[in-house]
Structures are given as structure tokens and as C-alpha cells.
Amino acid sequence: MDRPLVSIVTICWNRKEDIRESLKNIRKIDYGNLEVIVVDNNSTDGTVEMIKKEYPEVKLIQMYNNIGIEAYNIGFKNASGEYIVILDDDSFPAPDAIGKMVERFQENEKLGLVAFDVRNFYNYDEVKKIAQDALTDQNEKTNVAESDQYLMAFNGAGAGVRRKLLEEVGYYPEEFFLYWNEQDTAFRILNKGYQINFFSDIISYHKYSPKNRKSWRAPYYYTRNAFWLIWKNYPLDMVIRLTIELIYNCFYSSLEQKTFIYIKAMFSAFKNISKLKGKRSPVSRDLAKNLRIPFNVSFSFYR
Amino acid sequence: MKELLIIRSVSFQQLDKNIVAIKEEFKDYNINLLTHEHGVKLAEKYKWIKNIYTYPYKDSFKYRNKVNELKDKRFEIVIIPVTNITGAGFLNVLNYSLSIKARKRIICNVVSELKEVNIPQILFMNMKSILISVVSLICTFISSLIIGLFLPIFLFFIKKEDIN
Image (cartoon, rainbow over all chains, first blue to last red):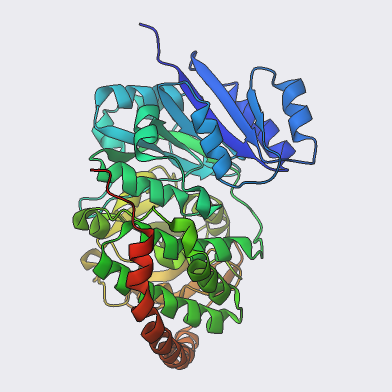
């Protein structure tokens, strides 16, 4: 039987060596029917030229400025596979991951998104217990990493989704620019009655930064988008409570870490609320309560 | 062999890196891991882990959330991985570690540097935290008075139109 087409979608911006290595590893995937789409966010380091020269099979789409995660949406619109695999520019799936992902989708029609086990590119093979092949013989259920008490979102450095479902629920929230976009998408997939499952035998390797990047970007966008995630998706009473908790955490973390970045992000969330116009669509109360969103992550990157 | 417990307070991507440094530093220790329920399957893949304990709560680590499995256990060292250099933002996990019987508590930061934190230091951090909390509560109260008036209007303004 012919295997369904799978579209790999990734974006990049001035990380030539990372995307080169990812594309090199994508070539090692043992799944025959693949389409690879790279959306470049106006790189100036020769990324585009490198991809054109070394990876002519890649469908390259060039943006004329850095539009952040909106570039994924351009990639999604151009994908023609039955399933889409979402990657970062510095991540790639294990050779057998996509074949396994397709099997899981075919076994369970209510499975909307397969969350890969995203591991550290530099260290995972050294610390793992058994060869990956040994896991393939186990049945699906034993490889699902889940909780009986709560639901999980997914990591954008490795996830597979049904293309039609993604079109139906909407692509990534472009107004977020960076971070928490996976959680926003997870709300909409789960609210449609589909499942998101983590599979421990479906691996994605990610070049997790070995250095602490003292940058404003992560704390700023994580914090601002946490407000927006709440305002877009939670029922009113939960919005009020979670917003107040978040405001408290912004003040607390600003004082504790001696920075204004969280307060700046909070003001930006309120000031730019018009970007959410027409986008608030509260999910069911059960889902709002059960999806595990660790908002305190926003306050743990600064130093 | 002496027993060591890692509280999984960071992603597996980071722990993959940290655990190499921890194993190198504490060669003669049995490594145990405490993780939320969804992390158990993913933690089972480590070759160096002796026991995996489940933190049976949806919440982040909190002192009041006790793990029955750990009630009678005693560890030489508890390790708290953090996603930054200083450990800022991880006081809740340090406080949680006080609910576990251990001789030493060690922070393992994002670049795998290990730094011991003793109980008086954690208590001092808590005192500082109380002061910051008071100021933050006052600021939050004042902000909430204003925001409480406008937030419902904002939410109405951004509501998706019902197509039906």
C-alpha cells in the first residue's frame, strides 16, 4: 500500500549551520513519501543560497522580513501532505519517527496530533537506555506518555498533525510572534474533540542551547503571550483569576530578578490587545481546567 | 551505594545534558528521579536511573504537595535542575525539596554547574520572598482595581463572532 504524503514544515532565520544539519538528517528519514518545506524569515547569512545549492529537493519559500511564527503558517498553507510534521530549524526527527507517526494516526482516527519526544541532540544518544529499535515492537499504549489527571500540549520542535484538522482549527497564532503558540493550537485541537498524545518511541532531536542566553526575547514573549493565551482561550472567571495571578508574577519576578522585562511585557499585552480582535473563543471549562499550562515557565529564563 | 534524587523541574532536553554532568560528579550514587506523571515514560529511557517516582499532581512542585512514595525515603543528595544560571524562579522547587529527607540540596543550572544550597539559605530566600510578595501584592491590588473595570470590556471587544 502506498504511504501517504507527509509534509515537513520548518522555518529559519540566520542559522545556516543548524538548518544545514537538520536538512542533512531529514535526508536520512526512512519514509519514502516526503515533502520538505522551509520558510526563510529573510536570513542574511547565506542560508537561502546554501539551501538552494545543497538541498534542491526542498521547497524553499522566502519572506522579505522576519515574521516570526507566521512563517510556519505560510509553510502549512503550501503543504500538500495528509500529515504535517512541524520542526524547529535546529531540530529533526529520528529516521524511523515519521513512519511510526503515520502508523499511530492510521490506528486512531481521533488522534489529532502526535507529540514527539523532543530530546537533546548533543546528549540523548549517550544517556538513553536502549536502542530505539527495541521500542518499536511494543504496542502503542505502552509508549504513550500521559497522565490520568491532566492533558498536555506539545513541543514545536517535533510534532505531527493532520493537515485537514490544522486547517479546520486554524494555524499558529501569528500575533504571538514567538512562544506559547503550541499551547494555543493545542487548545483548539483538543476543543474539537481530538487527542494529543506523546509517544516515547517517536523521537525528535533538538539542539537545545548549551549556554544560557541572557536575552530579553524569551521572557518578553513568553510573558506577553501568556496573557494573550489566557484571554483567548479561558472562560471569563478563569481569565480574571489567571490574569491577576500573572500580574502578581510579573511584579514579583521583576523585583526578584531586578528587571523590567516582565512589566514591559505585561504592558505590551494590554496595549496591543487589539491584535486579538475577533480571536477570543473560550474552550470548554473541562479543557481549560485540564490542559496543563505551566505559566511560571515565563519567569524562569531571564538569568 | 548512596542515594541521589533528581527533581525533574526542567525539560527532558535540558535534563539529557544535566544528567551527564550529574553522573560524572556523583559516580558512586544511585540516581533516582521524581517527575510529573506524563514524564514517567520519557524518564524510563535513561540508562542510569534506579527508581522513578511520580509526582501525582498537575501543579508545579509545591511544599504542601506530598509524595507518599517518598515519605519514608532518605537521600544523601537532592538535585534541583534550573533553566537559568542563578536559579531565579525556582524557589518553589527548593521549598519542595525541604519536604524530602536529604543531607544536601544542590542546584544544577542550565550549563550544568552544581551549587549546594543549604537550609538556612533557602529560609533566607523565603524571607526575601515574603518581602517581595508584600510589595507585589500591593502593586497587583492597585493594578487589578483598574484592570478589573476594563478587562471584561476588552474581552468582549476581542470575542470571536459567532458565525451561527
